[in-house]
Length: 401
Ligand SMILES: Cc1cc2nc3c(=O)[nH]c(=O)nc-3n(C[C@H](O)[C@H](O)[C@H](O)COP(=O)(O)O)c2cc1C
Image (cartoon, rainbow, N blue to C red; front, side):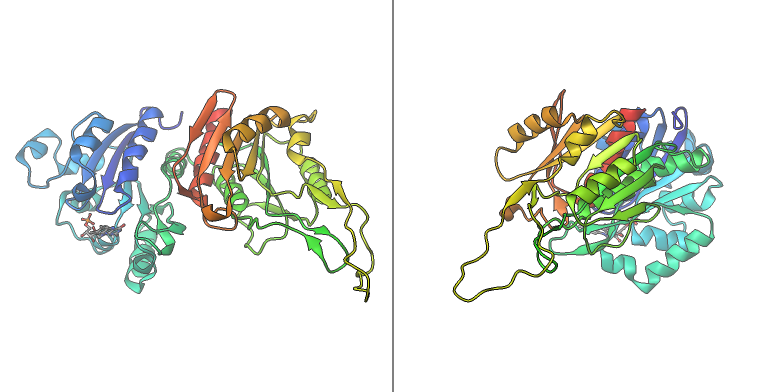
């Protein structure tokens, strides 16, 4: 474990995402790190020092002019007696102070006095993040040698706002911290992954096809999250309008049969995450000419044939990856259908979601999933698709470790 025995100073500043710092403390500590928290006055408006102290099992540092804290370690020692400083969440305000060398509270003073590596996880409203002042400050901090993780794209806490500004997920921050401390070691380095994404298009004739509402957002986010953790990722994508994720090999296909061939071509792999909404049926006999509407004749009958079951094929393949994950898009009886699918398909995990039209999940940016394994069912809260991807990549990394 690359964080075992590492001393991490966690600076928490005053943003909504401060609640995620509680999970971050837990994640760091379960990897063997010792966490010393410093909270700004703003942070204490969002989470209490009591909660932070309970999770970190130690003193929480808040005041620059506290006699008790100064006698305990003192702000200079606090700044230096650590292997890494993580600022999560980093507010626009704190980054502005850091970029300009201000030191008017304990957090900013420690950040100015340190000679240790600093990892910054910004979190703010997209307008604050894209403001020219924040852009300048981030650029300055990067030039000063600070490392950044995130922010991610997604919906903001304030309703109706979406864009770049969500704090990176705790496990992404953990991975970035490991990277910094471990010279680039990533938990999925050396692992191969194949991910499918998007819909398939099953042609009826040269101009028409059968499709579904899948946008590819979830599959693409998972490919990106696995790559971020160091995996060598092949993304087999149906027709989508999304940009290719960075650091991922993309194979574009149209039909289920092409998708299967591309997936099998990507084996052997350690990880398979089958997210694509593959059409169950294709037209039995494809028409090479456009079907014409003939006066007096009714609509042409469409005979359907079954498409290959890609997840099942991979789950029972002689080159079966160590971790096989399938997605189940259901509109009723999500848990039961997920359990049946887990068994039938030979998967280790089914990520089941309710895609009834009123959920807005199919084609949307958020997801509410249940993780179904042989051990039981875990319900995740309503999350952005990037967050589901980050968490799932972490789950896979843990399963393989
Ligand atoms: C409800 C609420 C949510 C806020 N969320 C954020 C945020 O996510 N990011 C941010 O940069 N500032 C946010 N702010 C503004 C900061 O709290 C404010 O700039 C504060 O001075 C930051 O202090 P600090 O940087 O010392 O922690 C929020 C303010 C309020 C009232």
